[in-house]
Length: 108
Length: 117
Image 1 (cartoon, each protein chain N blue to C red):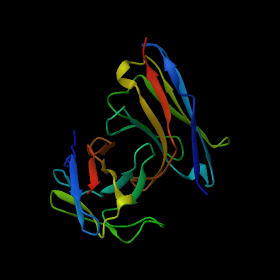
Image 2: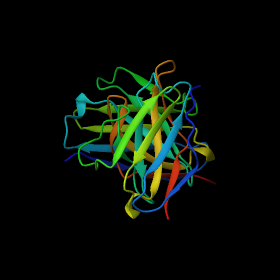
Image 3: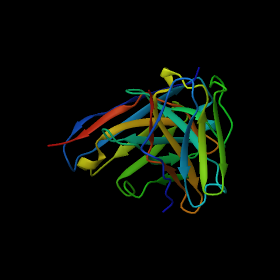
Image 4: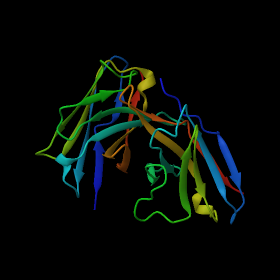
C-alpha cells in the first residue's frame, strides 16, 4: 500500500519560514493536499492540488511537489500557526485515500 | 455557508454496532462525494470510507471493509456510517467531510465513538 512519510515535528521561531515535507514513492505523479489541525479542532484544508489555496487561507501558506517529496511552506510564521499538519493523496491503484502521519509544528 | 454536523457517537461494547449520521447544509449535497475520516486518541488522521455523489460507488479502508457500510440520502442531505462488529481499535473521533476533487474541503466537528466493555 502507498505510504506518505512526514517528520514528527518541526520547530521554528516567529517570523521565520517553516517547511514541512511529505515523502512518497513518488509524490510527483500525484496531487498532494495539506490540512492544518489545531488542538481540539477539526482539520482545515490549507493547500490542495499541490499548490492551490482555498479561499480564506493566507498567502503565507504555499505548497510544492516534485519527485518523491511534497513540501508545505509557511512564511512569516505566527504563534497561531502552531498545529499538526497532514499531507494526503489519493492512491489510484487501490482507490484508497492516504494520509501522512502528521507533523507537529511548534512555534518557539 | 457549508455545514456538516455529525451525530450518533457514544459508548458501545466490543462486537456491538453503532450508526453515525452527518447532516449537511449550505451546498448541493447530491453533487458531492462524501467521506468519513477518523482519528484515534492522540493519533493521526485515518481515512475510513468514501461514497460517490451518485451513491453508486463506495470505497473502504482495509481496516473496516466488511464491517462498516457507508450510505447517503440525498433527499435528506444526510450521510451515514453503519458500524458493525466494533473493536477497541475503532475507538476514535469520526469526521464527516466533503470531497472536492481529491481533497476534503469541509469537515464536521466530529463524533466520538468509544468501544469498551
